[in-house]
Figure 1 (tube, rainbow, N blue to C red):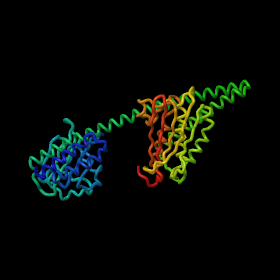
Figure 2: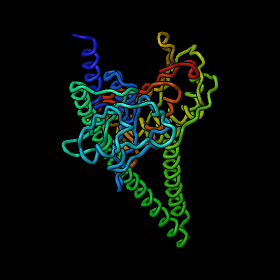
Figure 3: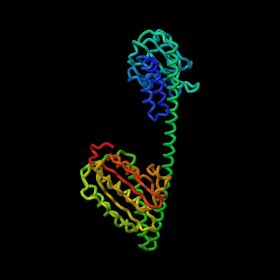
Figure 4: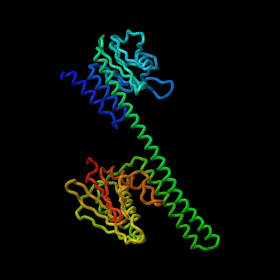
Length: 406
């Protein structure tokens, strides 16, 4: 096979590989114009796409060989210039010397097209609908052969398919995001509604207690109000932590010291839930670089989740464990519980925003924030779980997260 034919086939294959690609459309088009320029042996190749708004215009979306500063700025109205004529008539145009054609219109600004002559322009279409045009240009006056025109048309058909699939993928992602937003708003509204009901109940007890002079009843109501206020604060803080960039402040320290502090902080809560929190902390654990406050929140969230996963009628056990993986040069922290476990159907979606296995008691944000914080430390978090037997969450943190790469 001649080298020229091999080069053409390789270009067609490479362009077809973009069908179904998850890359951004503009990034795909950059590669396509470069591949087409090489396959067609032309110094300039450009893609113009029609805008959605009326009146529709052709906008330069990508180019190889022209000044890239005009990308997104160079425009042709339908019927205007050679690209506009091709789009209007849905017809390929091959010109030996483009600037001498009465339909020619120069690109606006400094486009570096002064020396370009031969002009090949074809419509990009999905079925019969024109979505844009593609142009190939040479420096010299040149007569494009039938085989070159056929090749260019074939490339344009491939490019049209790639654009269509990319747009369909973008629409799918957008629809999924909107569905997730809708579900998230529904979940968060339901969670807040439950908190408000608790606050209404607390306010009723306070009001009745004060009116009847029953301070015990008023105090019980006040406790309900305090509990609900704490939940609202926790929710807002988690939402802010998830939505804004997390800037970790790394300092050298021992993770065991942090785990001991967490153990001390949950003693009373664990006793109320009839849960034993048992430490298994490795000796001679190397110091690592981490953000104390952020890591404290992350691990405490996992311990709290573990406590919530243990049914009231069951004697609970949570193991807080640390160990050193010499091979990976990473410190591992484990939170193990003997709770209800995570159902198989929920394992794939447990880290989705606003997904919670706690029903009305949880929003699903905390685990997402924990995951985000661990990843900011260049670490990893994963879990194992068996329904009815319990769950094991594992966090792996590099010894020096300032330089370690995931």
